[in-house]
Length: 252
Image 1 (cartoon, rainbow, N blue to C red):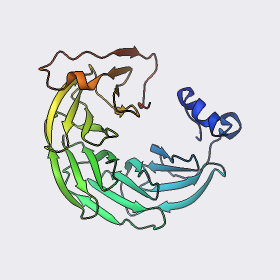
Image 2 (cartoon, rainbow, N blue to C red; image 1 turned 45 degrees about the horizontal axis):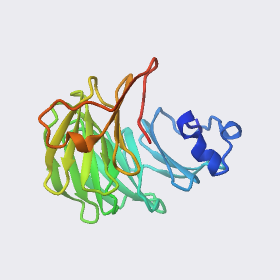
Image 3 (cartoon, rainbow, N blue to C red; image 1 turned 120 degrees about the horizontal axis):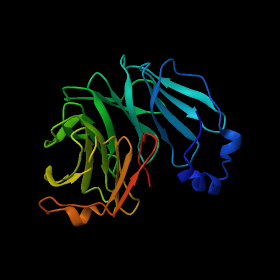
């Protein structure tokens, strides 16, 4: 379904996109869609599905522009690079794939996780990618060499979400162990643990990098994460919201 939450309607209005007239159901995938990523210019949408494919859509035409296979298993997450010509796909087979939108086959396959890759995000430079996995780890990859340059250990359960600050020095991860962890990407060391209170499905930094949001099944927490770094527990969120309906993601 081509629609967005009320929280982002102002962004579309400022870009001249009329949500009401453009909310429609478009056939394409043959299974449930698990992830979507919207280009910064609001022209294209990526979708990853249980059917083992990623599709690139024209937002305005509501039409498929390209279909990327080469997975064979469900695709849990997709992520666009800042320059929008490359994207990552996270798959049930434990592989992280780098695609050029102009090519149907992947440019790189980054293998090393021992279970499903559940989420990934590009480093600010787009030269590196951070992946999260059900094996309880995160990996930082050099995308040009398909090599793992950091292995982040600490969670006691599957890792379901990952985000990197705009300054690219710090990462956040969310896990089924009900915590959010902060990481120094330079050293690969965990610098703080934030207690969310339920399994975490999504994390996101604000555009200025000062705030961090974490989402669970029905709880939203917003953190001043810098205040938590170096503290031995006791971190408290600056905002707590409980939802009467299930939540699926966090975004500023």
